Image 1: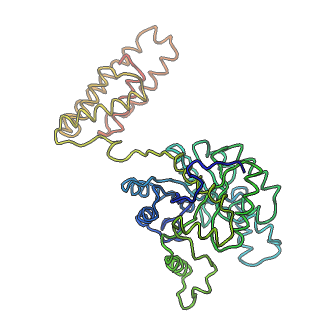
Image 2 (image 1 turned 60 degrees about the horizontal axis):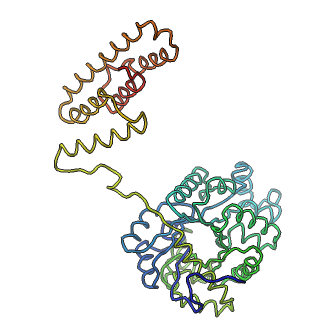
Image 3 (image 1 turned 180 degrees about the horizontal axis):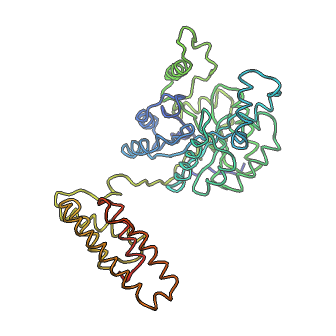
Length: 443
């Protein structure tokens, strides 16, 4: 294929980066605890691991911190639920779902029509903080469009994801792989071309190993697709638990969700026949490939890409208390730091510097609001009266009256001051006074 592994020497890899996986935050679909992910990552000799919950980003910060605290690089992502039919027409979508439940063949006539209303899975990663914000925004939109799962649509993916993100073809339930399994190869080529054009080298063909024939069909087809499109493969686990025997915990979770027990719903009746969605060692990966008769060179290419993705990711999330003023025993130092932060924020919004009145007001606010509310109220009332007097003086100037824009400013000042004096002292009152002084610098 003319491809050279950048992280290998031609022999078998001694480790890899586990990608595509779920924890207990994935709507009861997985049983992995966050600390188990980190422990297992160390056990298999990896220095990074990805977490891609189903449809939500609720675990990302805990996972990020847990990984960082243990010198493991966190790769943050999400496996989003995509349903274009829901977003196109909710009423039609809901009627189709109800009809399916009632087995009304008049409304859901064919398997193809039913397929159009099914959720698709979409896997994406964040390369950096901006990429993380993109995914969080998508996840939030999904929860605003909730039908059993948070749902986004294809257009939203292209609207919110960009060069700060990494995309793979994901699991069997992705649009890519459903087109492949349904032999719609021309449509698959068009979709792949669309993503390659948008994401370029940040788009990968994902291969997985499990006991399903359909997955092996997908893996082998992507060998041809790599030759055709020049898109790299990447190996991923789609792990749902940390250790081999933990599939039993996943089974019990499903039984509980169905309000069943192990007697009424024994493991052999469980529709989910896969029992190996654990975090495998690299030796396990090679053993699976040999068992399946999978192309070892292509596997090495895919493992090589796991390190490439690791190195593309560089996420730095602000962590408390670095993004807040720090408390100190010295009250004067606390006051100084708080005033410094407040001044900076005010400068960002209203200008490069504060006038002396604004500085005085901020200082009084900090000191008096906590120590002497009566004195502070007197000060505020005096400040309000002074502002009113100054504005009235400005209004009397003939040249100001001829200046329409400045007259509008004065009107806005009076609107802010209306009814001000009877209010309780609050942060909102302070903001209004600062706004007055920003509107009328002469004050």
